[in-house]
Length: 219
Image (cartoon, rainbow, N blue to C red; front, side, top):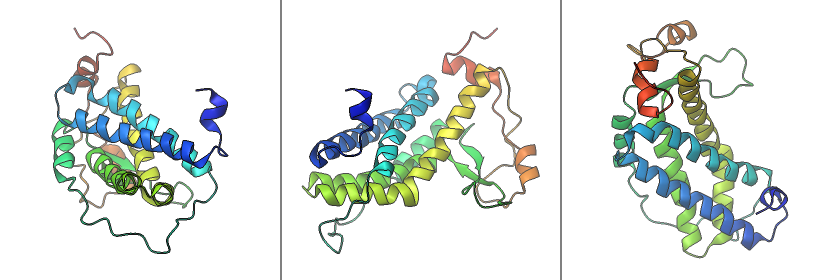
């Protein structure tokens, strides 16, 4: 596929829908496999790749004109699939590096960062994507695209972007040989100031991550 085709926003709707649905389904399948923990050594770089690719789909949805659903009210899909197991698997897999600090709105002045979890982010993104995928599989293509676009702006786009920054930072710290400080005390149920978040930024040493990530030899 050429770059011009990949980034076009005026494609045939069916073709555009198929491509977005493929990217969404590929992400869900891939991260579900990572969460099984069969290859923990490659989890972080693989998640970095998968979230990056998903955000390409999000960018295409964001650049597309507003998608209007065929029906005024969203059809009932029944109960949402439970993602607690996925969340818990990621929490165990990423336990030393799961918590990070994030600013929700970079245009809101003097907004203090808050503590977030990569495991929560991934589970929340999968929830949004599955919802749209259920519409798509039921033949409601426009409804699926509307939901993916709407939830990209309202939730999963910013959530995936935050997780991507955290994952990229982890890999960058290892590649640049810049160990992080101890994570002791940093958690999502605490109201921490910016200084406290910086001071307690996390116990992820290069010695802990470099070997598992396969980025350099350890002595």
